[in-house]
Length: 464
Image 1 (cartoon, rainbow, N blue to C red):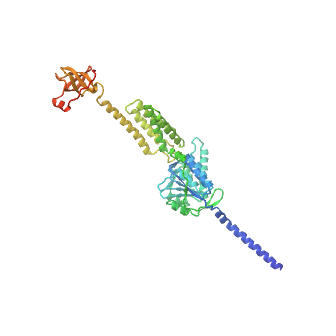
Image 2: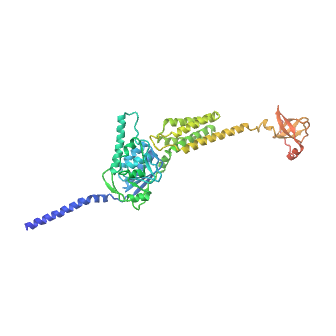
Image 3: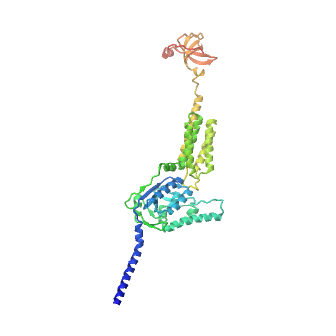
C-alpha cells in the first residue's frame, strides 16, 4: 500500500506538472487572443503639405483611435511635402501609439516626400501603392550651421539612431537611413520592397488589397503588448476633419497663401483708388490676415517675403505715379522672384508656390495694367466730343441768315456763326469746320445732303 500510494502521488504530481507546462505554453497565445478586442478600424486621409495643422488633425485621430480601443488606424498619405520640424515630432508619437498605426502611401503617383520617409519608418506597418515613393533630396534632419561640427554630428547621429531603432523593431531595412538623414534619399515602392530585408512591409494596389494583407498581422506596441489586426472584410470608418481643421489645412497651402496675399493687397489698392464705404478695405484686411495665418505655419524665407511686399508696393505706385510701365514691370519681377522662393525648401521639401499660380497672378496683373494703359492712350488720342472742340464736324441748322454772319443751332444751343461760302438761308444745314473766338466757322452742305438730313424742328436755346 505505501508503494501504491507513492506511485499515485507521483502520478498526480506528473499530471499537475503537465497541466502547468501546457498552461505556460498556451499563455502567449491566450494573451494575444485577449488583445483582439474587436474594436473599430479607422482611416484618416492626409493630402497637401504636412504642416502643424495637419499634425493637429492626425494627433486627434490617434487620440480617437486610442480612446475607442481601435484595432488599427490607417493613415492614407497622399502628401507631396512637409515641414520637417512638425513631421519629426509626430513621427515619434506614431511609434509610441497605443494602437497599431498603418501608414499607406497612395494612390499611384504619390511622392510622399519627407513626411512619407519619417511616417513610414515610425509606423507599425508601412505600405506603399505601386508607382509611389517616399524620401527627399534634402536631409531629413536639419541642424543649425552655427553649431560646432561635433555638436552637429551628435544631433544627426541621434536622429539616425531613432529612425534605425524604429525600423529594427519592425524588422525592416536600416541601410538607407543614415544617408537619408544626412544627405537625402528617395526610394520608390520597388526599391524599398526589394531591399534585404525590405524597407517597407507591404505593397498594396488599393485599400481592399491592403486590408486583406493586414488581416491577422501581429503588432508589438511600445508598451510591450502584442495585438492582432482584424481587417478582412471590414470598411474603415473615416475620421473627417472638422470645419475649423479644414480651414486651417487649406490656409497652410503655399499656393493659396500666396494668392491671398496678392488679392488682399489688390483689394487695399482698390479702396485707396475709390474710397467708399470701406468694403474693399475690409475684404483686403480679411484676405491679408488669412494669408498671414497660413504663412506662419510654413518656413518662409524672410528675404523672399520682403521682395514680394516690395513688388506689391511698386505695382501700387505705378497706379499713383504712372511711369509708362517701369514700376509695374519691376514690381512684377520682384513678385515672381519672391513668390517662387517664398518657402524654404530645405526645411519643407516639396512645399512651394505652384508655378501655374505665379503665371496666373503675374500674367493677370500685367494684362490688367496693359489693358488700362491701352484704354488711357486711346482716350487721349480720341477727338474731343465735348466743349468747343467737340463741335467741329457737327451739323448745325441755320436759324438766322448767314451773310456771312448769322446764327446757327447746334448741340442744343444757338451760336454765332460765319459762313465760308457766302450767303446761307435760314433753315439750311451747315457743317462746323472750326471754332474761333466763340464763333463757329461753318460750311454749307450740298442740297442733297440737306434733303437726306431732313427737317429739324426748332427749339429755344441760348446764345453763347
